[in-house]
Length: 313
Image (cartoon, rainbow, N blue to C red):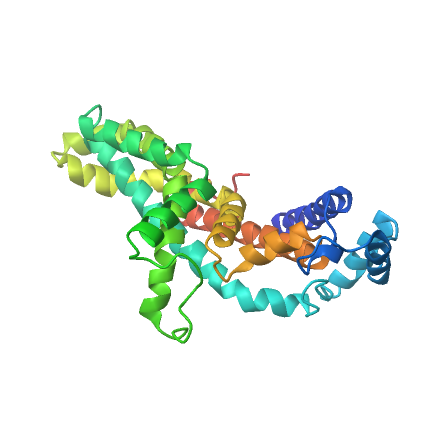
């Protein structure tokens, strides 16, 4: 556990350094954050100098790192607010979106994997593969735009932006309706890969010797699959979910930006465009640390399901 913790912290801070280097050499400037491109070069340089952005790269990063190690993530260059407060305001919305999507994705992929196992080489299995691959072929942001156009503009049955309607922030049903489209896009855009992982794990478990012993005892196929095969196949599936935690969070950030969802995604995209490096570095650090926590929890669950994995690196 200690080695895992040290490794995650090292990767988190190393990721912030790589991100800072890319931001430093990228186009864009905090001078254009107010929505105008008519700022003179002199005014742009004067503004960047006032924030210390004209200093050498390593000196800027060293200054941020020394404060971050003390728990001070600085002040947002765009919003002129404490970075921790900005993240805290939006953190819960992102966690609700991410966890609800992961929960639905996990059980949907397992269910589809079981159907593929029960009806191997059937029309149903081929139909599942075609539908999943069709959604996977579209980038997540393109699929989000299709959903907005069809369900938001054409049918007008679902809200296409925000976390809740104005004045209905405490209405749980209203917040759920705003979650339907972003959650659906996140689930459908990842469903093909996760279903394939679940399917492969189920098929491999189904070929084990203990499955033949269960058939020899006269147990039904559905009971064998749901009781024996599923339990044995859960560990690889959960491990894959934990390993994909960071990439899934990045996908959630993109989807939040498309749907103008009040989470960390909008904040991340805006901060990258205008090089608000205190916010970007803090979000990268938090995201990597959260991904490390998710991976560690996934490993603990796998060890609980299969104690033979204990002590395996």
